[in-house]
Length: 213
Image (cartoon, rainbow, N blue to C red; front, side):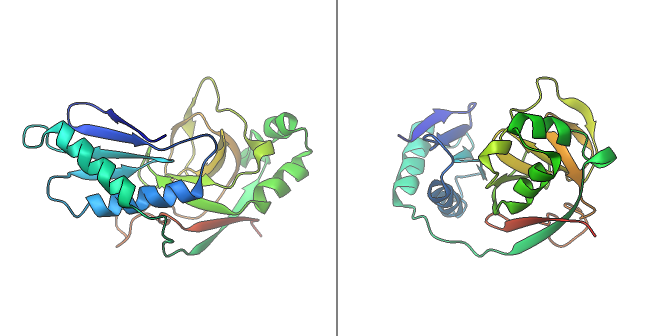
C-alpha cells in the first residue's frame, strides 16, 4: 500500500516500498517526479529508493490539496522505461583501497576472490541520487553481500571509494563520513561542479564494475 506522510510544513513523502526493492515501482516514482516538476506550485521533487519527496510553499499551497495532487499523479503514472547508458567502473579491490573486503567476505561466507566476483557480476541500476552531490544508490547487489551498514560511521571515506551498505552499492563522489563498507576504489570522477552535467550518472543508468587494469 502506498503511504503519504507530511515531511515538515512544506513537504510530503510518498512511500511506495512494499517489501524488497521494485524496479517497476521505481520507474513509477520517476514518472511521478517528472509530472509534478512541470507544476508551478511544486518547488522540488526528490526521488528516493521506492519513495518520493515533494516540497511546496506551505504559505501559498494547502497541504491537503498538494497531497491529493501527489496521489493523483502517482495513480496516473506508468512504469515507463527511461533512456539508459551503461557506465563501466574500473575498481582496484582490496588492500589499502578496500579495507572491508575481508569483513564482507566473512559475512557472506565467501573467499575474498569470490566476494569480488559476486560484486562484479551484479547488473546495477541507478535508482536514486542523493545524500551528497553525485552519490548514487545502486540496486542489483548480490543478496549475499547485503551486509548492514556500520554501527559507527567512519569520519572520513575517500573520494572514489566503492562501497556497499544494506541492499545497495555505491561510490563516493567526494571525501565524506560514511557508514558503508569499502570494497575498493575507482579513479572515475563521479561529480564535477564545473562540467555541463556535474554528475557522471543519471537515474536509470546501468553500472558494471570491472577490475582496474
